[in-house]
Length: 359
Image (cartoon, rainbow, N blue to C red):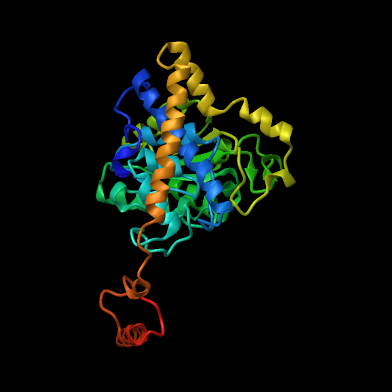
């Protein structure tokens, strides 16, 4: 019931030089879905109904614009805040909630932290917790595609803090040397947990760091959906044609906490947050659509009501799902269980049969 109840979303934008009005309306729907999911997940974590969450509020345009400039065959290497990227590539909201809960329908079988999902069917690699490791992973995959002559790109999403990681430097250096088809997409949300951008580096911009590795660096307004789309589209075309990698620094702002384990009030002011919210990417796109006559305040209110209802219903469906079978811990480790694991599984089954453990 819930799978088909989500608002109409175009999974991938069509090939076009600039996003059409219709595409921007669909992008607005998708960005609202991501924001409403964020709101709900923060509340659910505080209620103890999910264990952990890393919100993306304020970064919706950057993620949707970048995603729609890609093709289905491209590979995405996310950090742990790329909910809108997953939704833009067609991942269902229920699949996201199943992973946050770790129920029987969770494709990762509860083996990853919440918010560290991955979906092989849409080339969305499982997120890694260590900062920056997805960068070198994306480069390795791009080098493999290059050698196999596969006309695809890989894209690594990361934050400003990751530009101080070892993998950032190793990844960009190797990509520059091999000229592999990778897009490095930095969402500069101004804060690496509690460390502000100004205390991370003396570089005037993060994009200029790419110059040291012989890679073009581009700095854009990450709140501008069309600007993000155009930059990633251009970077993809360059990579596919053999022109090598590109680094894009998308200037955004993280409205919420770094994660549900963080309290941003301890290190940033309310006035700073209020100023950033005046550049809210959802509000900006809404204003554009209203100005174009493609949207109304009534349609906007109806959309938010519809989306919030879908989010609530979808989570309820996932929460009512069957729990994960504990015996799944024996699966997927080896193609054929070792004698010792067969013995341990038999012991577990005996304990369940004797009523010592619940199935």
